[in-house]
Length: 267
Image (cartoon, rainbow, N blue to C red; front, side, top):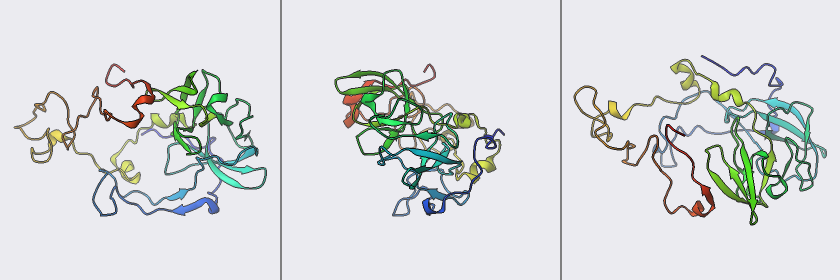
């Protein structure tokens, strides 16, 4: 088992009660009680932190008060206090610590933690918490250790190289934060035992080849069999596995894709 060492990274403070709420565990089920996301359920009880991804408080400097663990995300979060006294939770960028300040402004300098429109950030800069539409809130590069790289500016759009290796156009009036998301060691974790997955709310995954033909396209056969299919399929017959394209052919955002993501073993 390998774990992230929180000592020396987190500030050790308790969560801020005004920004806490409870969320019922859906266990992967929809409003009709049907499972729409498999392998979810159980796990330790958690409280939801109200994390700000809109960053609609502008031109007011903010200071990091605490750095805390958030059970609902891989990144660490920081409790920040603005100059007018309001407190909010935000995701913490790498190399920022308690006492550091940041600014959300069109005139903010290009410095780690600061947030400004993509059109004001030079090519070659790493950004996180990137909006797709101006004012809609951050959608891209929000999890631990992630970032997008601005590779070019062209025709009112910034071209971003995403964590998936896809290069995509995003309008320059959309906002982004400078830097990379912290807790980059999170991806090196090894849970070490089945029980830890259960604490996290992850239920066991059964291989398709271990099922019967009625339950999965890979199922059946005497003893250990190959799947008998040229390409791997999901339980519902859709292409899955390495090296297969699963993107919807007529997806609305296709016109913004400059270069498709690399898939498969040779990525």
